Amino acid sequence: MLERRDVIGGAAVTEEVIPGFKFSVFSYLMSLLHPKVIADLELRRHGFEVLPASDMFGPLPGGDHILFSDSIEKTQASFARFSKKDAEIYPEFDRYLMESARIVRQLLLETPPDPSCRDWRAFRETSKLLWKYRRVGGKLFRLIDLMTMSADAYLSEWFESTHVKAVLAYYCGIGTFAGPRSPGSAYVIMHHVMGEHAGAGGWGFIRGGMGTITQAIAASGRTHGMEVRTNAAVAAIDTSGGRATGVTLTDGTRIAAPIVASNVSAKLTFLQFLPRDQLPADFVREIESYRTYSTAFKINIACERLPAYTAFDPHACGFAYPTYTHIGPTIDYLDRAYDDAKYGDWSREPFVTPVAPSFVDDTIAPPGKHVVHLFGGHAPYTLREGDWETRKPDFVKSVLAVMDSHAPGFSDGIIGMQVLTPPDIEARIGSPHGHIFHGELQADQLFFARPAPHYADYRSPIRGLYQCGSSAHPGGGVGGVPGHNAAREILRDRRR
Ligand SMILES: Cc1cc2nc3c(=O)[nH]c(=O)nc-3n(C[C@H](O)[C@H](O)[C@H](O)COP(=O)(O)OP(=O)(O)OC[C@H]3O[C@@H](n4cnc5c(N)ncnc54)[C@H](O)[C@@H]3O)c2cc1C
Image (cartoon, rainbow, N blue to C red; front, top):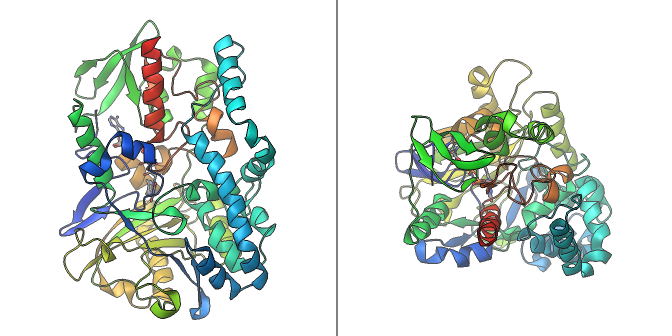
């Protein structure tokens, strides 16, 4: 296992960026890690422990709030304050969405077939999949709706209150350059509620930060003989006669290997590590046009105190503190945030997800102090005017203004922070444009088209070179699924 940085884990790391404060520098909430991956790798034996996040708390202008909880009744009670009709229909919507989520969950562990391929093996794989999911047929239209509709249009078929719709549509802009009125944005809601773990919508914290997950994977791997090398940047994938033969590092070291599995972005694997003339021209074109443009930002804060939301009342909410908050009160608010980014500005009023893991995890901050992560959008990779280097302080001010408007005085208690714009994310983990999922989660870049038609089965045009990261099905998130599925295909090929 070769890693360019001095720490393994990619976007799932814990780093002590400010002395005494351990940040989940990139990913910050866990829900997508697949139960089979947890079991197969025995991650619980190696320190993996989920700490539930609170219900999702949404402060609204004027001091009101809305809640989104795992408890249907609690969510209904909160929605009822904005619309009786929305509260009544919510259980039916939840059932409907969860049925779709179950279908998508089943597809996670599938290797996408190539329905356009005419050879016997591809035909058999496609037929097998269609037969296995024959009962899904009647629900096909639900999936088409999710894949093609905007989040707003999809939710408006059920709900009338903009606050209710904004709670559910919020996810559609997470790590996606889209607004709630962009076609196809409904699917991203689904991607975020597919998880099966603790907390609202299935989200939880990991004791010790997200790096605990990747350290546990490494510990598990070592028990099976895996060797990890850090500060080992790959410069090229070596090939001979259309077959992978190993890699060459930037310091010139050559490592021979009959199989190379790459979890870096497809753009790096195929456009940077390999000469283009070794790949089919149409495949190169597909990878070149694979959309990675990103507008997601992350600010990691060490602070004296937690945000004290004026709209939060522990008795009314039924929990001690909102460790998981969404600031994005209306559909218009979310859409305006996108509008700004569309034209190359950061959102004047960004949507922000403040999470406070140190409220439940005493291993990541000194006693009495806290770690708060602000994830949100939109902060376009390329600014229309100026550059990130000079304009970053103004950007940070606009994010903190949103925080202070809901939790007055929060910014006065900041001890230190790490600000990550898309170029910062790209510089650290190499994901092009700093895309958090290595590429947009939209219909043309999903399942048998991720990352490119004909190569969604974790293989590649180079024999022995496999794709095992977020650029492959089912996409980004700390899920372990692309790795799981790629391993299965590698073993299958070895048995042939
Ligand atoms: C800011 C941010 C917030 C996120 N929030 C969440 C969240 O809360 N929950 C969630 O489930 N998901 C979240 N995600 C998404 C999730 O973290 C990623 O989808 C997932 O970690 C990607 O894993 P990966 O193995 O595919 O690739 P990565 O984690 O990107 O790993 C790629 C690795 O390759 C290394 N590398 C790059 N170039 C080279 C080279 N030349 N040689 C050797 N090594 C190289 C990189 O350093 C990196 O370690 C977030 C991502 C980001 C960036």
